[in-house]
Amino acid sequence: MYINSGYLNNSLIDFKDKSKPLVVGSCGTYRLNTHPKLPTYRPRGRIDYQLLYVSSGTAHFHFDDINNEMIVTAGNMVLYRPKELQKYEYYGADKAEVYWIHFTGNNVKNILRSYGITDDMRVFYVGASLEFERIFKRAISELQRCQPDYEEVLVLLLRQLLVAIHRRVLKKEKTENEYLDVEMDIAAQYFNDNYNTDICIEDYAASKGMSVSWFIRNFKQYTGETPMQYIVSIRITNAQMLLETTSYTVSEIGRIVGYENPLYFSRLFRKQKGVSPSEHRKNIFKTMEPPLP
Image 1 (cartoon, one colour):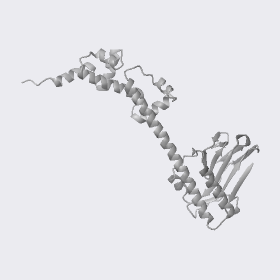
Image 2 (tube, helix red, strand yellow):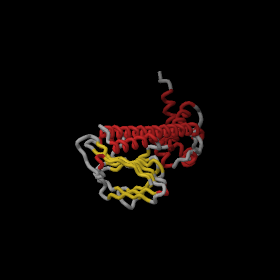
Image 3 (cartoon, rainbow, N blue to C red):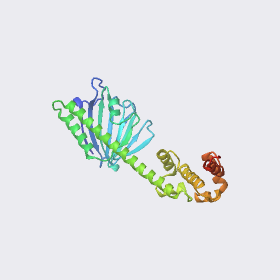
Image 4 (tube, rainbow, N blue to C red):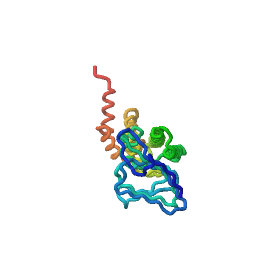
């Protein structure tokens, strides 16, 4: 087992300091490889904030209830706020390596929010990065050496850590949004190209490795319609064009846009346009007739 830590004023007692916007109280790291277990249990939490970074292996956390266990993997940050139950364990078998930092101040909430860490964020993924480890190690060194103005350096290091976290979170959100946009655009194009065939939404989602509910929810968010609503809209729009520009019968047009049952086609058309296909065609022809002299 490896441990390295540093404490402000060499005191292990947690404290609350409202005299400054941000104050770093302690920082450290644990690495388990042979030691079987390192547990922590604070039923009333602490009076300061604690940010932990799982740099390798896994750690076991219990939030709100000691019986609720959540396994947190490498690349995740965990944030504890004042007076929150703290119960977590590191196991040697999991090869856990964790960095932590405690901080307090009179403006912590707003500072965290300014770096994209909202009040509901408790566990969030930032990925593996030596940058995080370097910042933690530098903070440990500053606390141990206590050089002039080291308290200010600690605050700067914490802000640097928060900036690095914010950039990682923003990059992840951007990547996810780009992925969604691309996938939903591909789906919309597929439906446009194949709207007159028998499309199965479940099969399409499965072919892309997506759950049906996830795909429908995100497609609707992207287009404003569910996949089936989108397909029906394309079918009816093209049926309208054929009614207005060709002499095909209503039944033929229904088949062209994907409906073998003419009654079902007429019912959907009326629902979308307010009139039946035949009535729509009659209305169009009336507007095209020359006025009587």
